[in-house]
Length: 308
Image: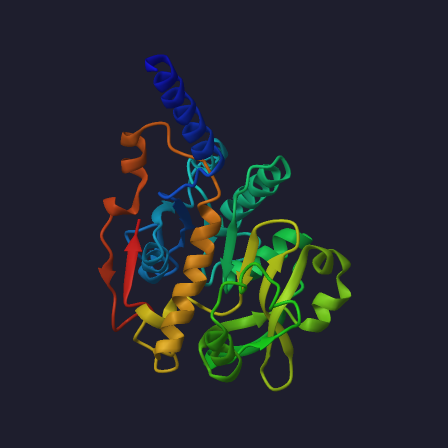
């Protein structure tokens, strides 16, 4: 009887261990946010708007700032320590800036990793969205238009409903996104639908989930890659709950819910990645908790900024 009991306990232990391996989930994801150069005279080299950090933290992720002046080897080490990366909006040059150099290194590493089964998500917002199109195609195909400081509803395509990005959104929120001006736009360049349709490589790589128009030009506003966990929005999901210096930014309950569901989706993608720092001390040293955001109003478009 005692031997049978020991065997039962042993069997249950083996079963539980096997189940935990199969069902293992990364519930402590860490996402990198790419910094970019400070353009005006400043004692600092780079910055990240705090709204990006807060958005990811609100969905259960921690954040590591990705500095723009690191070596390729340092970037590779960091890539193997984090669970995803976000390319934020801004004004950096898409080809020649340090932002662009860093983004290309991480984009290439992500493609290589995903090709060998190492799931690593990438997100681009506004400038980051534009950077993704350049990195995928290898050339600039953007069209100049003026979509500064305007909120818009999304014109969903047929691909949106079955997309990874939107499949977890409540039906009422999808209705609101399609009928209310919930997405904040602040960009001078766009990927025109005509440019997307004329570039076979872009069409093969990305599906268009939504479009918008400035009254003349129809442009792509939301994308996700077919075969990679790579996503982009020309609009700014992070602004709705956290940026209050511009009157056009929506703060309604549906606008704030939009931010949360976008964040929850990307963080859920990062949970699928198992990268980790080599030690707790190394992890703690890298986290953005080591820096303090600065209240930057009224001479900024951001309420708070991290400077590096």
